[in-house]
Amino acid sequence: MKLTKQDKELIEDANKIIIKSRQVKLIDTGDVGSALTTSKDNIFRGVSLGFYCGIGSCGEYQAIGSMISNGEKEIKTIVAVWYNEKTKKYKIIPPCGKCREMILQACKKNKNTEVIISKSKKIKLKELLPYAWGSSIEK
Image (cartoon, rainbow, N blue to C red; front, top):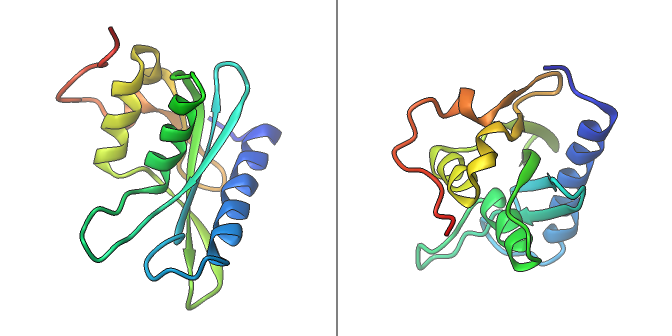
């Protein structure tokens, strides 16, 4: 699927959250920013967290946690962007396996979440995760 204007704005939101989090100046934190749009058209953002004790997490985890904290669970579109400190450039990256499973488990309908995987392409989560080991944890 081709990207829409809203998709490009979501990518920019992910870039902006990286910039904002860099001001905190923590090692291995804020290299990946994520933004998602819910079925209610709300936007939630998060950045990767890295701590020496090993409890870091991905930007998508933080964005999803924010979404759930605000009473939603259905993701319409999600993107993750990695900032390369050496080149000072941003690159869209697909979610890792853990994040793919988390997106799916948050809501059954999320198998149809549109995942932006490059500057010009997005695909549905069910295409990225054809053999999920679990299903939703919805009640």
